[in-house]
Image (cartoon, rainbow, N blue to C red; front, side, top):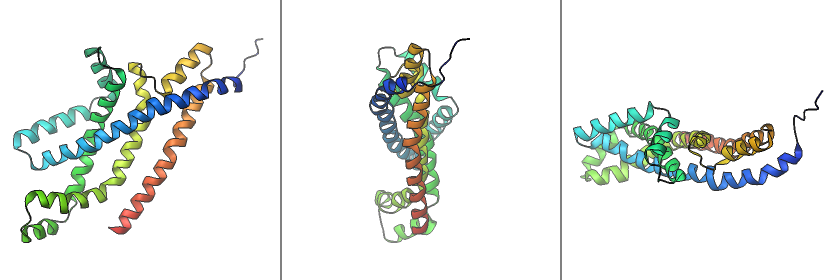
Length: 219
């Protein structure tokens, strides 16, 4: 009977540095860049759907619904094979940013609608321009109520980065999976991937929860 080793600390020591490097150069880069894109574009989409021309609002609504209702892995593969000359990392950042734009846009929209009507009326009574009303009154109040939800979506984006394995981006899970295949042993590398995800996402979720309570109390 063959002696099967379920866990090897030697393999752990071998793969751990590569996983950390892949996390910093791949997973974390896509998470941060994708979140920044989604936060900025999401606000732009929310404002355009609120105040833009009817045609623009209709087109944006259709795009948002289409992107939200199709799996992100399908979007990654579609762009990857349609534009083979593009760098996979660039594709990953773009797709994650655009995909989560649709979710953050809905968060912004809900925050804007949550601004009391009296705030709009007060701005009108003070003869504030429409642009000034948005930048000085509406958006700051909307952001205060939406930051926790935006943080939660950023965490969700982070946890979705393993889908990048579909387009061969050298993020952490891809590196772990490749290492496991080369050594015919996946337990160590994939377990470490899960622990690194937990170590990064759990403190962030606690921070978001604490921020949510502080903003709720301030509100």
